[in-house]
Figure (tube, rainbow, N blue to C red):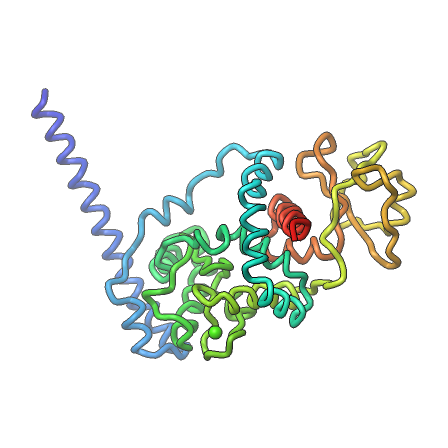
Length: 324
Ligand SMILES: [Ca+2]
């Protein structure tokens, strides 16, 4: 019996090893072609050598890509985790620590600094959790075999351009398993569109240069249409909530919402700002908290198309600003 089990294990392991070797071989074959394409797109041989020296197919990345989302968290659960007391306190501390730089960048881009800090806090816990995957290996794995090959193939090419332009070395290009990079978790395409070299040292460094991290996030929001004199929205009360009123897209003026008995959470009437329009978001349905969301909420949704994410960024930004 023991022998049989041992035999089974050995067979299983050798089968796995063979499958892995086959994956790596087919990956290597694909890579030869990809390199030709990259070269034709202007990537130097030197960059290709550095990026794909010892290139690895990462089965773990495919596993993560195929993973079914776990049973969906409620927004209340998500908020508890993402906008925790610890994260609020840390955000207030970080705001104070970097105040001069944040205020300068906030003014330069027309974005209130608390939103820069909140995005930084939610994306990477203020730069402390940036992923730990080799971005080139991860993107190459997904470009070779993932569910969205064309998308990741384009992102891999974008990543090579970033290395080619000498913003970061291939070895230091770390990020999430899906290729979101640095302290702001920009995909390579977002990097090319929005990253900034704020300290003017010739490198857009969203990994280790704080000024570049903050300015890149601010620039993303500014270029996506941020209104620097408005907030994201607010939690509200509504006397008789109807399902049909809940819609981020179907915006009404604040006057109209007041007429529909929407008030601030403390019962006071909404501040009426001429021209401002808002939609209602109820992430946990009409029995959960209801948020009146303004234009800037839609801008945050361009960063990440999730109402859980956008609402949490707004709430964290408010909490950070309130502690200053
Ligand atoms: Ca720089």
